[in-house]
Length: 72
Ligand code: SF4
Ligand code: SF4
Image (tube, rainbow, N blue to C red):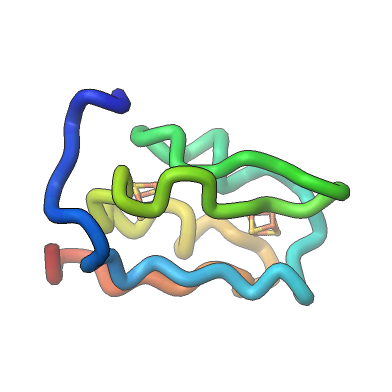
């Protein structure tokens, strides 16, 4: 889905890697392949690809992800 873009640099998505447990749920639910993994934790690989659907934030079991759905 790398061809579907919104506006660069405006996503509300944020990730607190200090609390991430590396379960990879965020990458399973993300329709835009925003996440990658490094050292057992999620990383935001393509933040500008985020369409702020909110799925990752809802499904993260430890609250590591924050996003404001619908503002984009
Ligand atoms: S809000 Fe949606 S598009 Fe953005 S990173 Fe999370 S799951 Fe992917
Ligand atoms: S869903 Fe949350 S805890 Fe799981 S890998 Fe993603 S950010 Fe980390």
